[in-house]
Image (tube, rainbow, N blue to C red; front, side, top):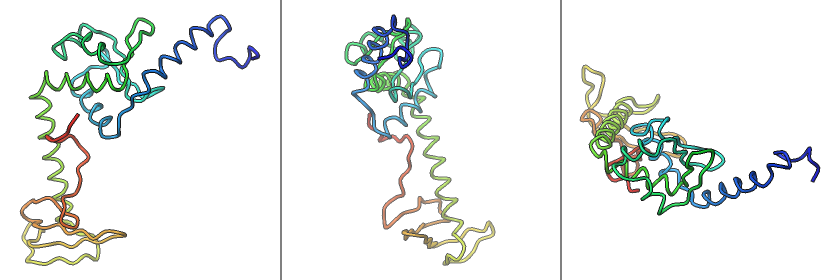
Length: 197
């Protein structure tokens, strides 16, 4: 291959190939969208960027560990326990942890800071209920409402909401109940108390 087409000088080809091989090895274990969202939430809540950083490229949801000692304090245990169960490699004096290892890391952080995580779940649930209640009290243009109108503008009873491909009914608008779709609660794409890792 001509030297002009190489990504690195000839003298560094061996090291470059080894690095790409390491990235490929840890990228064999990927997380689904829900797991990635939960991992990102916990990093924002508990893990400072100067301790460990969540990476999105070349492997999505890998972790670049900058300070093993401080990270061990956050998870209340040695990082070596996580490294013993997941793929990782050293790069420029830092530890790069696979997505599966990142999930183990976040699980350990959640166990060590259960109260903070629960507070976040409660806060997000409250926000979701408020958003759902507000949406239920404001029917789209053209939607009919039943029941008397109160001074605050909300109505009792059932507000029908329709749109392309939907048939939604937000029951109990004035009582703050969550809206439902065909009898089932609308999904809330956030951390919940039942979120499994």
